[in-house]
Image 1 (tube, helix red, strand yellow):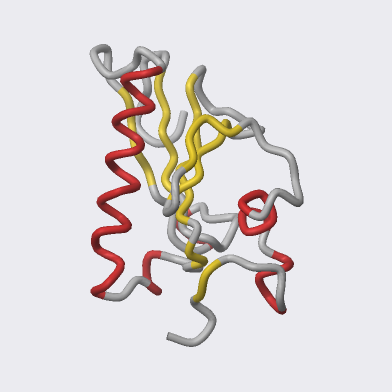
Image 2 (cartoon, helix red, strand yellow):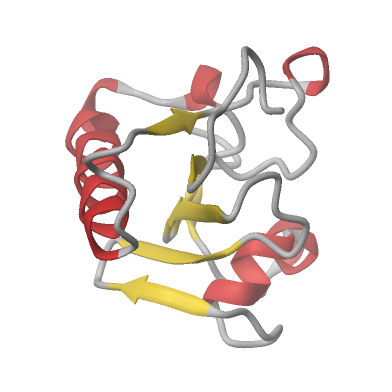
Length: 126
């Protein structure tokens, strides 16, 4: 698929904030990392627990996923549940959220899952 490849520092990927964090070019408070996923604390948290779960593969939006990406999305959810457990929000409750395009609130065009918890959450992000 054009424009979808592993994060690197060539061409358009060099401008992707999350690709640069994954490549170690920008600092982040990483809370999890494996061969497919990197997770780090959001720098503008909307809840006491606000972690971003990001695939190493650069995929701009959910609309750009293909059938082969299903296991990757499943892995993102597995990582989110593990972090929720580690942060102590699994029992009280937490939210997972993926924004798509500008109208859906997406500001970084690299698929990422928000994990929010640690307080009573209302409808929407707040």
